Image 1 (spheres, rainbow, N blue to C red):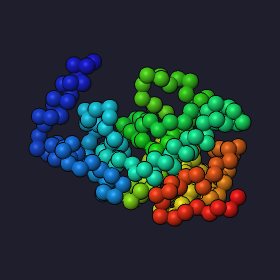
Image 2: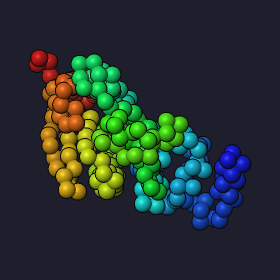
Image 3: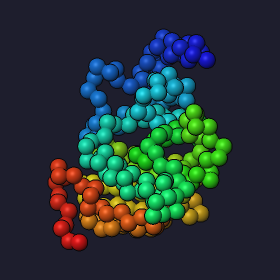
Length: 229
């Protein structure tokens, strides 16, 4: 198995000029970040695997997209939301439990996606091999929008989530301190709620949790949350 993977990597390195042009910039170039344009190039699942397990790359309909390195504010939103949801929805403390929430990538068919967070009802994971990459589309995803990924998240990935059967998606816009929640109904995304600044969120699929948005915005934000209770 390991020899086969090494052979694929060797073919990838010694391929044609055209295939070399499809590969991302070498590691010696500045890393992608939230302000740089999103890099993309044609590729396959084999091309993605050849990049290694640590590659921050997604594959959607034959195109590889390099995910940028997240900013501090981006990561802060994700960590705060995990902290709020784990007790009631993963551990069942003060809530129903029954969920698995993670920031791993997942593969369905020939497509690989990696939202900022994904959530599965555990009842759907009975046949999931814990040692393998997740092979079931999640019930819920979270994306924190940044300048470099905004168009991609609102366009290409939005369509992919609907096509692959993700039922709920949440989009956070740190620059304006806004959360939008959506539900997939008959193949169409319907806006379910809009929350701002220091609102306390209660939204599907996590209606039991009281999620205080005031904790999402770090001191480095260009706006300060309200001090209202």
